[in-house]
Image (cartoon, rainbow, N blue to C red; front, side, top):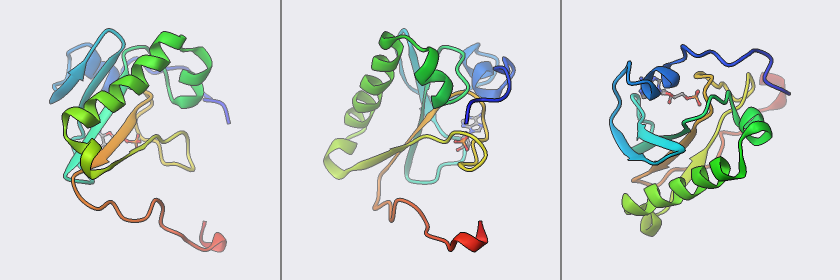
Length: 129
Ligand code: AMP
Protein backbone atom coordinates (compact mmCIF):
# COMPACT_ATOMS: atom_id res chain seq x y z
CA UNK A 1 0.00 0.00 0.00
CA UNK A 2 1.33 3.43 -0.88
CA UNK A 3 1.12 6.37 1.48
CA UNK A 4 -2.32 7.80 0.60
CA UNK A 5 -1.93 11.38 1.80
CA UNK A 6 0.73 14.05 1.35
CA UNK A 7 3.35 14.61 4.05
CA UNK A 8 1.92 16.63 6.96
CA UNK A 9 4.54 19.28 7.84
CA UNK A 10 2.91 19.78 11.26
CA UNK A 11 3.30 16.19 12.48
CA UNK A 12 5.01 15.83 15.88
CA UNK A 13 8.38 14.73 14.54
CA UNK A 14 8.48 17.53 11.94
CA UNK A 15 7.93 19.96 14.82
CA UNK A 16 10.71 18.32 16.83
CA UNK A 17 13.03 18.63 13.81
CA UNK A 18 12.20 22.37 13.56
CA UNK A 19 12.90 22.81 17.29
CA UNK A 20 9.27 23.71 18.04
CA UNK A 21 8.88 20.76 20.43
CA UNK A 22 11.54 19.38 22.79
CA UNK A 23 13.17 15.98 22.61
CA UNK A 24 15.84 14.13 24.53
CA UNK A 25 18.42 13.80 21.79
CA UNK A 26 20.83 10.87 21.68
CA UNK A 27 22.28 11.30 18.16
CA UNK A 28 22.32 13.77 15.29
CA UNK A 29 24.14 14.04 11.97
CA UNK A 30 23.39 15.68 8.61
CA UNK A 31 20.58 13.25 7.75
CA UNK A 32 19.37 11.71 11.01
CA UNK A 33 18.01 12.70 14.43
CA UNK A 34 17.46 10.20 17.26
CA UNK A 35 15.75 10.78 20.60
CA UNK A 36 14.08 8.94 23.46
CA UNK A 37 10.47 7.83 22.92
CA UNK A 38 8.14 9.78 25.21
CA UNK A 39 6.27 6.58 26.16
CA UNK A 40 9.01 3.93 26.32
CA UNK A 41 8.04 0.29 25.73
CA UNK A 42 11.40 -1.04 26.96
CA UNK A 43 14.13 0.26 29.31
CA UNK A 44 15.78 1.76 26.23
CA UNK A 45 13.42 2.95 23.48
CA UNK A 46 14.89 5.32 20.91
CA UNK A 47 13.26 6.78 17.81
CA UNK A 48 15.58 7.20 14.83
CA UNK A 49 14.24 9.52 12.13
CA UNK A 50 15.46 10.96 8.84
CA UNK A 51 15.60 14.76 8.71
CA UNK A 52 13.89 14.70 5.31
CA UNK A 53 10.10 14.81 4.96
CA UNK A 54 9.14 11.15 4.47
CA UNK A 55 5.88 9.61 5.67
CA UNK A 56 6.93 6.00 6.16
CA UNK A 57 9.33 3.38 4.82
CA UNK A 58 7.23 3.20 1.65
CA UNK A 59 7.96 6.88 0.99
CA UNK A 60 11.55 6.80 2.32
CA UNK A 61 12.47 3.73 0.30
CA UNK A 62 11.02 5.27 -2.85
CA UNK A 63 12.26 8.88 -2.70
CA UNK A 64 15.23 9.10 -0.31
CA UNK A 65 18.76 9.24 -1.66
CA UNK A 66 21.19 6.40 -1.11
CA UNK A 67 23.05 8.74 1.25
CA UNK A 68 19.98 9.31 3.41
CA UNK A 69 19.13 5.61 3.50
CA UNK A 70 22.71 4.65 4.32
CA UNK A 71 22.91 7.31 7.03
CA UNK A 72 19.80 5.98 8.76
CA UNK A 73 21.10 2.41 8.94
CA UNK A 74 24.55 3.53 10.02
CA UNK A 75 22.99 5.72 12.72
CA UNK A 76 20.96 2.79 14.04
CA UNK A 77 24.07 0.66 14.47
CA UNK A 78 26.06 3.57 15.92
CA UNK A 79 23.39 4.46 18.48
CA UNK A 80 22.94 0.82 19.54
CA UNK A 81 26.70 0.49 20.03
CA UNK A 82 26.98 3.78 21.95
CA UNK A 83 24.22 2.63 24.30
CA UNK A 84 25.96 -0.70 24.86
CA UNK A 85 23.17 -2.67 23.20
CA UNK A 86 25.47 -4.47 20.76
CA UNK A 87 26.56 -6.69 23.68
CA UNK A 88 23.17 -7.47 25.19
CA UNK A 89 21.04 -7.35 22.05
CA UNK A 90 18.38 -5.10 20.63
CA UNK A 91 15.50 -4.92 18.19
CA UNK A 92 14.63 -2.32 15.56
CA UNK A 93 11.13 -1.94 14.16
CA UNK A 94 9.21 0.33 11.81
CA UNK A 95 5.46 0.72 11.32
CA UNK A 96 3.81 1.58 8.01
CA UNK A 97 0.11 2.24 7.67
CA UNK A 98 -3.06 0.98 9.29
CA UNK A 99 -2.25 -2.69 9.88
CA UNK A 100 0.94 -1.73 11.72
CA UNK A 101 -0.75 1.10 13.71
CA UNK A 102 1.62 3.82 12.56
CA UNK A 103 0.70 6.87 14.65
CA UNK A 104 3.16 9.57 13.63
CA UNK A 105 3.30 10.15 9.85
CA UNK A 106 7.03 10.88 9.68
CA UNK A 107 9.16 7.81 8.98
CA UNK A 108 10.81 6.49 12.16
CA UNK A 109 12.55 3.38 13.34
CA UNK A 110 12.07 2.21 16.92
CA UNK A 111 15.18 0.86 18.66
CA UNK A 112 14.45 -1.27 21.74
CA UNK A 113 16.81 -2.76 24.31
CA UNK A 114 17.78 -3.00 27.95
CA UNK A 115 16.04 -6.27 28.81
CA UNK A 116 14.74 -9.49 27.22
CA UNK A 117 12.30 -8.26 24.59
CA UNK A 118 10.09 -11.31 24.30
CA UNK A 119 8.58 -12.70 21.11
CA UNK A 120 8.74 -10.61 17.96
CA UNK A 121 4.96 -10.45 17.56
CA UNK A 122 1.94 -11.52 19.57
CA UNK A 123 0.23 -14.29 17.65
CA UNK A 124 -3.54 -13.99 17.28
CA UNK A 125 -6.05 -16.04 15.36
CA UNK A 126 -6.94 -14.67 11.92
CA UNK A 127 -10.66 -14.32 12.87
CA UNK A 128 -9.79 -11.72 15.54
CA UNK A 129 -8.14 -9.37 13.05
P1 AMP B 1 4.32 4.67 15.72
O1 AMP B 1 3.13 3.97 16.31
O2 AMP B 1 5.30 3.70 15.08
O3 AMP B 1 3.94 5.81 14.81
O4 AMP B 1 5.12 5.27 16.95
C1 AMP B 1 5.06 6.62 17.35
C2 AMP B 1 5.88 6.74 18.60
O5 AMP B 1 6.12 8.12 18.83
C3 AMP B 1 5.22 6.19 19.86
O6 AMP B 1 6.05 5.18 20.43
C4 AMP B 1 5.08 7.42 20.76
O7 AMP B 1 5.29 7.13 22.13
C5 AMP B 1 6.17 8.33 20.22
N1 AMP B 1 5.99 9.76 20.45
C6 AMP B 1 4.87 10.49 20.23
N2 AMP B 1 5.09 11.79 20.54
C7 AMP B 1 6.38 11.88 20.94
C8 AMP B 1 7.21 12.94 21.37
N3 AMP B 1 6.75 14.21 21.46
N4 AMP B 1 8.49 12.67 21.71
C9 AMP B 1 8.96 11.40 21.64
N5 AMP B 1 8.23 10.35 21.23
C10 AMP B 1 6.96 10.58 20.87
